[in-house]
Length: 281
Picture 1 (cartoon, rainbow, N blue to C red):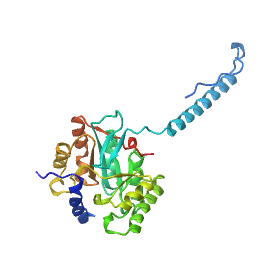
Picture 2: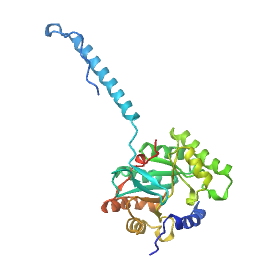
Picture 3: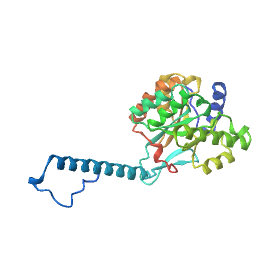
Picture 4: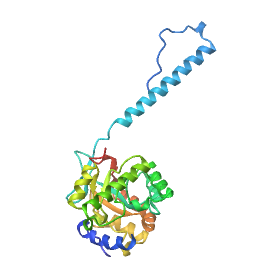
């Protein structure tokens, strides 16, 4: 069986494959109403006040909850791109990521992951956001609660283009994503894992979290089958605490995703919520 190497070796394999596929309580009245004075009108008035007060309290609590930042539990280790716990956060975790979305299967994958309460990052490309239908697909993924990542506009090897072209690839996609879902991507992953000093600096200036991966297999011919892919993703020697798992918007990955999550959990791995990664605001 072919074993897929960590990111340092795997970027070359991915380059070859990708190039071919391209409530507050109600307020009391100032004066109590005696039982003799209670009328239908009084009851209606008191009820109205109670409903209004409860709605106001609920709105106020919702605003306070939304404003509270999530305490970071993990950070990305740029030495090996794993997810490292901060303080006493659980360490037996993995991060799920899906690249090249939203092509054909990303929405269905998101729905399956949502049903399993398995968070993930969907890294999108601009050339999959050309039509109203594709825009709607991104909106659906975002509405299900998934984090959106920047995977460049047209999926070039960033090391083979100019700095100005690198900037355009990254910024134009972030602009496009914001236009569609109302917020900019929180994460960045370079196609083929090929970062440059310029793009690393630009990504951090843009407030995105730089990311690569630990392992992935679904572009290799041996694993373009749901059963084979599910097996290797769970049983590879590279699965370890903090592993950053790379998958793609592919038919066989869509077919395998449920079994992959179930297999990881059977090995006592929890799925990291990307919103708990340091730098996500």
